[in-house]
Amino acid sequence: QVQLVESGGGLVQAGGSLRLSCAASGRTYSIYAIGWFRQAPGKEREIVVAITWSGGNTYYADSVKGRFTISKDNVMNTVYLQMNSLTPEDTAVYYCAADRSLATMIKGAAMDYWGKGTLVTVSS
Image 1 (cartoon, rainbow, N blue to C red):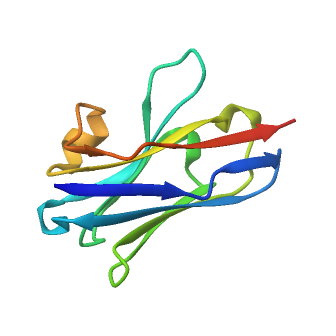
Image 2 (tube, helix red, strand yellow; image 1 turned 90 degrees about the vertical axis):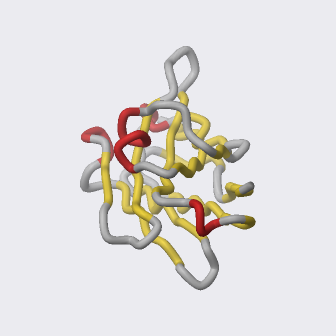
Image 3 (cartoon, rainbow, N blue to C red; image 1 turned 180 degrees about the vertical axis):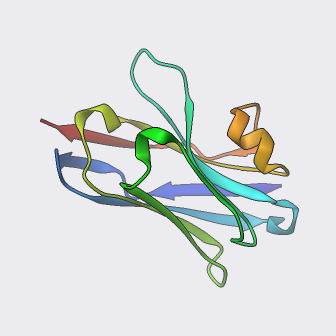
């Protein structure tokens, strides 16, 4: 089993920044890809960013390219999501997820592991 614990959500004004963290523990050797999804009120959950556990490949949804950056601390087994130039449309619960396949993660299919989520609210 893998445990994912998110932190760093909160309230920020439009144009501001936040950094989310996802700490992975347990059988992390089984993870191939780790990333962030988000679900806004009344909308379906969507993939935001993803990175392979090795750090060699990344994926960014078009809506966040140039504003969000995913990074990974291999020592701490922690993935970070730096979010800049936030807009009210970024308001959502952000979930960390891990899976054996980056392709599966990009497709938004069922993940092997999920965190409980952290709320990001961007005020206008």
